[in-house]
Structure formats: structure tokens, C-alpha cells
Amino acid sequence: MSHAYGYNIRADVEFVTPVGSFVEGAAEIQYRRSSPIDYQQAVLIYTSPTSHIRFYRIGHSDLLRVPEVADFFVEGSHVFWQAASHTPMVEIFFFGPVCSLLLERHGIPALHASAVSIDGRAVGFLAASHGGKSTLAAHFIQLGYPMITDDVLPVEVTDPEIRVRPGYPQMKLWHEQAIRFCDDPRQLRRLHQNLNKYAVPVSNFCSEWLPLDTLYLPERNDNVNEVRIDPLTPAAATIELMRYAFSAGVMSVLADQRQRWKLFANITRQVGVKRLIYPSGLENLPRVQDAILHDIWAK
Image 1 (cartoon, rainbow, N blue to C red):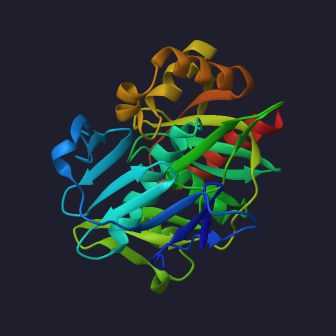
Image 2: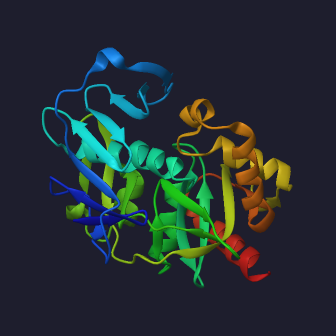
């Protein structure tokens, strides 16, 4: 039994991913191997242009088909997986697209972001793949700031504050970054033979739900020499949050967009969203770090 994103997960397999331990209470997600799926009833609603995941509806349930990896049938709190074997790649798609869809179905937006804890508050880096979010988070973790999540950031609107749920203590980094940030390269596990990305275990992990302080949108730029932080207006920030939801594409089909706008607008009224522009290169990370800390502490 495991725990991630605020959910107790009861699974019929032992995860390779270092998820947290089952906490007190019932299992919110049941994860087990599927019996044969009736694909004849499946209606295609969306195909991801990047991951090529195909999203279907079967009655009131969801079906995610990941080519050459696995199929996931989501029925309420039950997730049924179907694959030749339960490989680490199956887990990557469960803890990524499947869990983000579950969160969204429960009214909890899941952003494509990594986050760390700074002075007991969550600071997130919001970007698409290759956008620099994991590298920035890894740099702060190396400095001693606890990791909250990598890739999927669940944001929950509570009274009186916006809180984030922790993920699990592992990052996914490209080889150059993984070698730089991993204390023991022997711990690195390649995610897939055709992918130069590695699972990096993290010991300094925050398992608590924390209030969200600031979201930064990193932009590496070869034509700048200085680090610049520009606050976004609430309207512009809301657009960016909708754009960088982890399952933005499929949610544009499944969700009421007016209600979704209201939900994200409520977040941006309470949380600072800022564009972070900085020169490319790992050697510039200390300057980026100083600018972020100054921006947070200046408040």
C-alpha cells in the first residue's frame, strides 16, 4: 500500500517508484491489473500531440491508451492497467497522466510543475517538458530546500489559502542534470532504453501539504545576461495556468471551460505568478537562485 498526491493507493503490484507509505484511513485509489477491456464501446475524445496518448470515454469511465506501454481504464476510484508486464514505464504513465486525470476529476487542478519548500511554503516552477522546471527544483533541493513534487503539482483551493499536495521523492532528469545533482550516480535508473532520462531518488522530501507562495514560469534566453522576474496580471496568470495544466489538452474537452477559468482565476488572485527570465547554462543557476530568494523574502 502506497501514498502519493494525497491519495492512499492500494495496488496489486509493488511499485519501483519510491512512493510514500500508506497513511491512516481507507484507500482512495485501487490499482490493479485489468480483465479484458471492451474497446468496441470506446469513443475517442482526444489524442496528445506530444505523448500520443489517446483518451477515450466508455460510458462514464475514462480509457487512456499509451502506445507500446499500457492501457489504463479509470472507473471512479479504480484504475485498471493492462500491459504485457508492469514495467517502470507503466508506472511513469500511472503517476503522470493517469493520476493527473484522477486529481482533475476530483476538482483538484494538476499543474505541469515541480516544487520545493522554502520557509515552509511551496514555490513552484511551471513549464512544459524541457522548460527547466526540474533543473531549477533540483538546484534548490541540492541547496537543502525539501522537494515537494516533480512534474505533477496538485493545487487545492481551501479556505483560507491555496495548498499543494506532495508527490513522491523522485525526480526525472536528463542525463546531464542527473549526473550533476545525484550524490551517487550508481543510484541512477534509466527510465527507458530509448530515453536519455533518469530517475533520481531524493532524500530531502516534504510529505506535508503546504500553502502555495509563488509560481515561476522559467524562460531560458541566450540573449540575456541578467536574471529578471516580471509579475503577471491575474488575467495573464490565469491563461498560463490553464495552458500549463498537466492534462490541459484532454481537460479542454472534458471540463466546463468557464468553471475552469473561475477555478484558476481564484488561484491567481491569491498566489503570485511571475515570469522568470534568465541566461541559459547550469553555471547561471546560483544567480537565478539568488534572484528567486530575494523575490520571495522581499515580500
